Image (cartoon, rainbow, N blue to C red; front, top):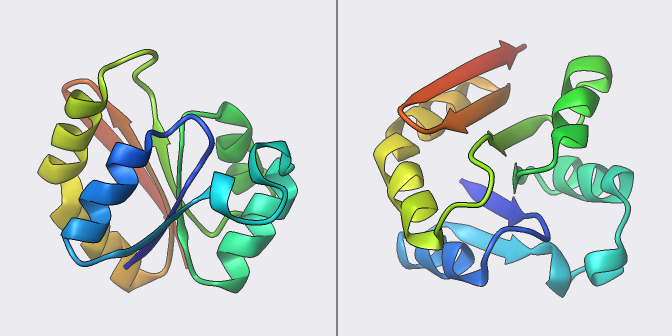
Length: 120
């Protein structure tokens, strides 16, 4: 799996995913950094087969209407600690891996719950 973390996702999450062996980049290290428009992030992710990790609801809307980004993890937790976010990713990594193997998906992570939509 390969990940692209959006601007509001901590570099600690990037480091954690890299330590697990996943190719992971942060939007601040590509394109126009934190100025990059959501559409450019989605296009870059789709072209490079990256799973976007974000808190931004605009990506969910784009996925539902345009099917882009093709692979999305939407964090529905507001302001939480990075350690809690890492813990939730850890708890759900097998489900994410399974969805990634099947194709396009949106996986929403909430406190105590998760939901997904898969598009083929």
